[in-house]
Picture 1 (tube, rainbow, N blue to C red):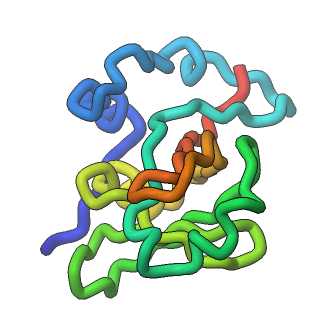
Picture 2: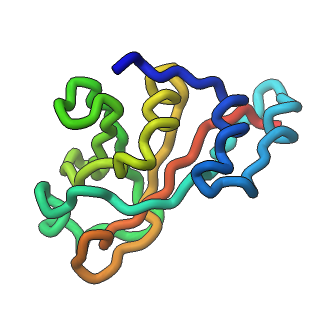
Picture 3: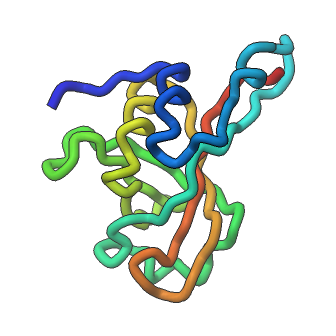
Length: 141
């Protein structure tokens, strides 16, 4: 499968296909204030996929909304060349960004764009017990 490349503009133009039609960052990107800290634009909230196969059950009770997560591309994954692993800040693997959700985020990561993931909610054990958000770093303005 050829690598997927996407610019920020194309990501936002196609955001409606991922249920993100309400996210219109044009004013945020249009004006840049020199020296201002970057802002984080929330793009999606989803569940961590594959939690039953990793350490999610062991650490689930220690996760809280707002906790930082680490996203790591795994282009050599034999099942999905766009795979993105999800880890706790301490390096415990929780699972993956769901395959149906990962194409734009894999492309952004491959293009060197900064993404931030944080725990959104922790529910009783189940296939979607850990929900998280992914945000894109945009220039301050």
